[in-house]
Length: 555
Image (cartoon, rainbow, N blue to C red; front, side, top):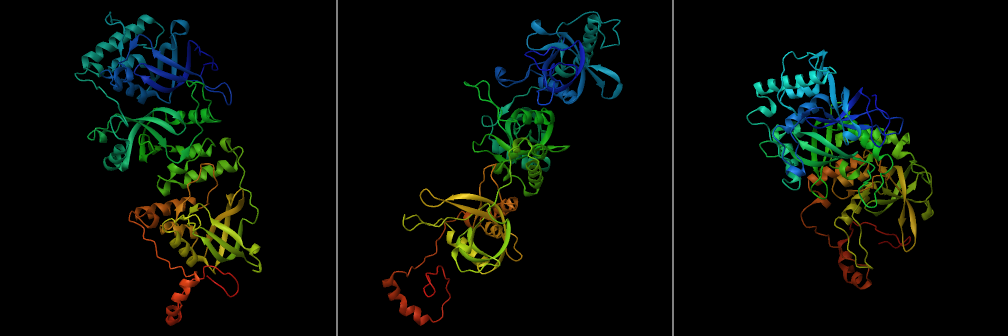
């Protein structure tokens, strides 16, 4: 494009080419130039058609109601030129034009590339704009709509206007479209749109225009899907959070004091704007955020997965809380893209380093003891168990078991704590296990003390991940990680297993009241003496050795 680098006010040459970034109304577009260099922001100019006017679009100033025909006018121009290169011819700019440029835009006729359209004239011809000056002699009009003559241009506008009036096109129709925008959270419930889109829309995806990009993962969208007209949701406006991806936050210069943008936030927004802004695309909606107003979903772009492209370029991270809403089959491309960016230390991962382990990342051993529902003691193969220090304490990566209580403080067990621990015992104790260590963490252990704990995946026999078995049976849940935390290599499989357990209302996900098993503690000598007779009469009794005091005393 022939525009210079960004300045306080970009001045266009008399003629040049530019890409249309967005269409604000039927007579105004935003032109995007080339960045002056790597890392520099591309210049933008608001460009308005000379000597024509379009109906005013809905805004807060007019109670979110369009002037008749305004949306149809904007949509014709948006479908025609967003993302495409046009030729511009400036007529007025600078101090006399305010914050915009007035002129003409030209592009090839879509049906005949040998002809050139003057977009102002074609918009008037279709009834989407009207000349600012009406009337005048239209005889002997030049066929060259793009000529330099102001007189020829005015004649072409008047001829196009009469043609539109005669055919009752656009704003000249008996009842032009009048759109009223409805906002999620005010005029309709956000979850209603989620439910209706799954039930009424083809393949469960709703057609929307992405009107504005706040940052790389938050957009303002307008519903344009005719399948939702019967539900009263056509032209509903909502904020979409892109599922599975989190981006650096864009600053707000209007705050006092202004907040700066996080590193790569502007680049991430530009990356998304170039590909999604004002495109009409299908969106799959999954749910809402905690506020119940912002919707979470996936944007389906014909050229691929926008989330994966963002991650691959190192402009964002995987968002744990939104990725849980996605179908498990849609997650692997995002994980692969993020891992590739991490390995290449791209942008937001420029300081990323793989987790450092104090021991081997993989070893074989025998499970000696289950400490809790997600932590075990393992004797590595080749070691002789002659000291407690030979045992390795391993916790299941990205798995959270219900916590055991504390008798001293009177804290009770969480529901299913004993069941989870016992199931882990049945699956592991005395068996040969393969351990893959993924990360280490400092765990608080007593006052002012910490313990470095290894977290990994434990495989026994045909079971690739013992943690997944517990999660699938509803005895444990997946750990909620921060976006930059290290996770299990099988994290997505764990989340998928948890989703199935939730759907089946298993264990910790059950709605029914938990009934704790009654345990008769006979460690008190008086109680033990009282029950000793009945235990002797039972003869051989099955029991679990919970603790070994010494070679002859067990609990």
